[in-house]
Image 1 (cartoon, one colour):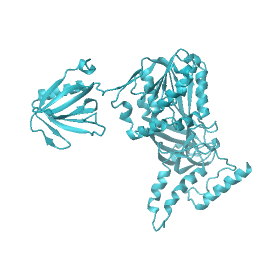
Image 2 (cartoon, rainbow, N blue to C red):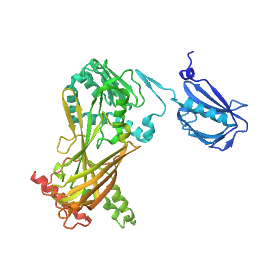
Image 3 (tube, rainbow, N blue to C red):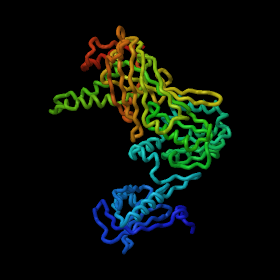
Amino acid sequence: MAEAPCMNKLKQKEFTLASVTDLTSSSLSASPVVATFSCVNQVKELRFHDSESADGFSFVLSSAQLFKLGPLQFVCVSDSSDSTKENSLSRGVIIKFRDEKESKDFSDSFEEWTKDAVTKGSCLPNGTESDSKSKFDNKIEAASAKMYFHYYGQLLHQQNMLQDYVRTGTYHAAVMENRSDFSGRVVVDVGAGSGILSMFAALAGAKHVYAVEASEMADYARKLIAGNPLLAERITVIKGKIEDVELPEKADVLISEPMGTLLVNERMLETYVIARDRFLSPNGKMFPTVGRIHMAPFADEFLFIEMANKALFWQQQNYYGVDLTPLYGSAHQGYFSQPVVDAFDPRLLVAPSMFHVIDFTKMKEEQFYEIDVPLKFTASVCTRVHGLACWFDVLFDGSTVQRWFTTAPGAPTTHWYQIRCVLSQPIHVMAGQEITGRLHLVAHSAQSYTINLTLSAKMWGFGANQGGILQTSSCKLDLKEPYYRMSQPQVYPVAQEPPAQPQDLQIQSDDLEEVEVLQQNANAQL
């Protein structure tokens, strides 16, 4: 019988301890305890048991941590004390040593045994995937990841993306127009989904394509690819996370569709650059290559009234005998913390847009954790600014053709639509007035971002060169929880005039009726 790999490098070690106290029960060992570092079924473990009996418990070293409390005392904690039990819980013990030499030797051994410790891995057709907690698992909460992979593991959602003909057609064109980048090359499809991009690469003459997909969609991708036998012999589907899998060779090309709402939502771009660092050969190609987040202030009285009126439900003082008004403020704030996802008329923009560049070939993973964009615009009309509109585009920098894919307002609508951050307190601007601010994105463990937006109108006209801020409005939004309005661009037959008085807008029930009348008139004109 072959010896386990970890046993070839490390020999079993034993230490006799003064005592061990279980933190979950505060029980103190009655007799000296033996701590043993060993490898069982290729899993590195630290086992504690009485010197007089074999009874005890084990820590899996891949999930264990050791903290020094004093010269002769440590605390050891582990996510799971028994990796074979599905419902095993975290456990901690306080370890006391008889002398400082034994304490140091134990600490050194712990460091040696936990170095590169992994639990037993599962075999893949052309590599391995570790069962230990990966880099992805460390930064993404389990509930979010489960929901994410469940969503993309369903055919109906893959169909929604495949039927986005702007998206799918642009990818097909970018690959086929740049056959020289794919012909005879090794390609890795990052987050392959249904495998459509892998098959595009194979159609363009790729030598071999590794389609890496972590969700259950990997099984559907295998079935779909097998149904296309001329391509199947050059495509290998690997079920696992990019952060965990191992590939037998480096890639000449990475292809992926890692874009989310506002480009960065779902944090797939981090996985894309991890794939670059792990698998892409020097001077290899990335499709897409560069992304840009575009931003511009907008004015949309209809949208503002629609969002504000949602909270009017909570202004009822006699709802079945209950006064709901104590929650009105919270409800109002909650609705304005939702970014609006829809398609809008580009004529609602009140200033030329600016953009922030993200170069996928150079961006480090950690740089996605916090993205800070200073804003500066010049208003082209006199109006009320209701917030910031955003969209993105990406560049496929092929050797033959450079092709852009855009989600801009006015361009053919995609399943990403556009996104708008709406201020609960609009600001007033004059034509030619400078609008400044900041868009600050902070990644969180639910695979999305917290958006912090500030817009300010600087002094305009005589004395403006002295600087100063006239108005400022801020909002905090959760990109994970958008308001999916997703309507087609509305027709605005007349200019949207700002209210006569600059004080906070007082919304009446008649306002919605006026909006409906305007829309009916617009439809009649059409």
